[in-house]
Length: 68
Image 1 (cartoon, rainbow, N blue to C red):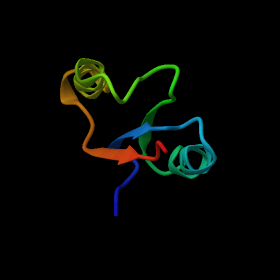
Image 2: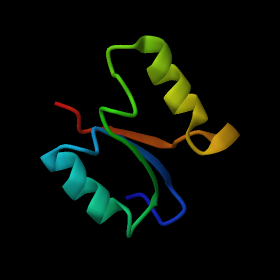
Image 3: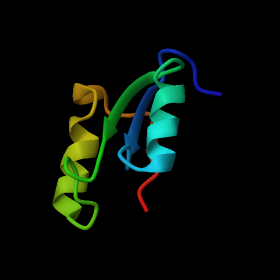
Image 4: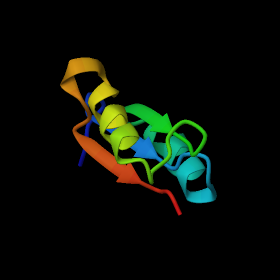
């Protein structure tokens, strides 16, 4: 189970599932979240940049895809 210092990147945070996950995870982990307006999952280069850019050089430890 991830701890408070775990770096989690949540994509799809604007949908019903994503919003609930963001609400819960924000109290339990170091969370970065992106919605559809912030990240187009059909754009491979944008996805790579988002993952590499999350949390600076460290990057996320866990990636959660809640996008529909």
